[in-house]
Amino acid sequence: MTDIPVHVRHHISDNEWQARCELAALYRLLAYYRMTDLIDTHLTLRHPDTPEHFLINHYGIPFELMRASDLVRIDHDGTVVDTLNPQGRVNVAGFVIHSAIHAARPELDCVIHTHTAAGMAVSAQQEGLLPLTQHALKFHGKLAYHAYEGVALDTDERQRLVLDLGKHKTMILRNHGLLAAGKSIAEAFMEIYFLERACQAQVQALSGGRPLHIPSEEVQRHTAAQFDSEDEKEITELAWQAALRLIEAQHDDYCR
Image (cartoon, rainbow, N blue to C red):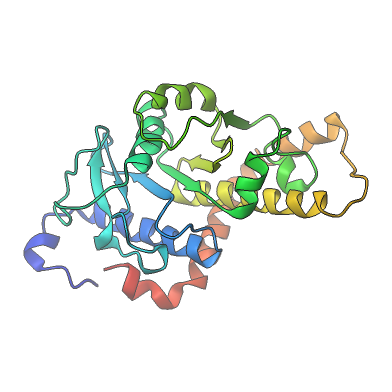
């Protein structure tokens, strides 16, 4: 299952190892869907045994090559507390953004932040995400916005990030990119997938040079509510398992 030395692997619980494998798979799936930005942007997962810790990428490793053993365990102060990577390097901006949400929202275990072309384009548009598509309507009344303050290196920004996020799970970081979170990796993946696709569709729709059709407010509310149904939970898990099949051939590589 792994080429990690036995004496090291024995210091990691089965829960942590499973979490590492699943998070490594998420990194590779974002690479598969072309949501990467060289070595920047971050995906994090709350540690299954120690809620005040979370797993993040070792800074500098491409998402396409991420492995379970490459992930770094840190606390909310950014201190590395990792058996596998005691010298693991963590990007400060990733720590600031993700630690803020993990600390303030204990029900959200996974946080995804991306810099895609479509996400950055919509983040720079004054209106933000427009209700143009079914994908966009999923976020009607559920999408937060955070003003750009420069590269997220200042820990003081964490409070403002949390205030702006409020009760939501998705946020557009103005002039920056997208953020999505979930109670599980599967949920966070579906949130970022739909938000990214909504942004892609908006950029293409606006480039068409034709009048746009906006559904009524009633339809917008109705569609958003449909995405909150109990069936959606099952669909989320089915979609995650389907996505994993796309990188099934890489399993032995990323889960080591």
